[in-house]
Length: 147
Image (cartoon, rainbow, N blue to C red; front, side, top):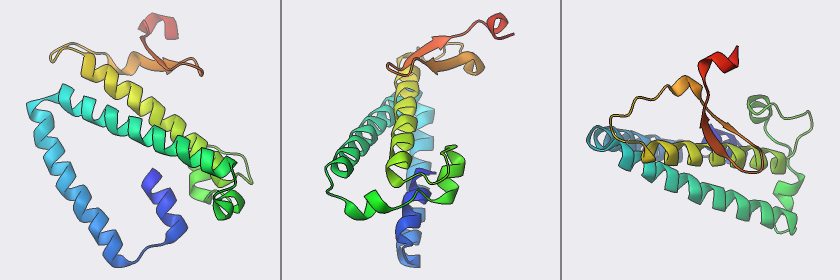
């Protein structure tokens, strides 16, 4: 989803869109076969990709705050992005980037968590959640506690 929100700002031509689609197709197939061989390696890889994304969005926020990206500082978040992240009306690109970075932090933690699990560990995925806004932690919740 993040890609589409940011592409909407630029509205690239058909050749760029086709290049993205082709790259995604190649990556999907390579990742699929890699996951069949080593799920934990794939989760670790994605966890590191997400770490880089978090760093990138942090640098982007820093540039916005220092006034280096004047156009983005004045740009409203796309309507679809505001709806997706439940952003208040009139949200700016900075608000969207904060939401996207929080999403990437969650993805990073979840992927590193699953990379740490033994290959054939039983996991009740419905009861793994992330809490504590200052420090992302993954806990296993007892299903009876949710009632």
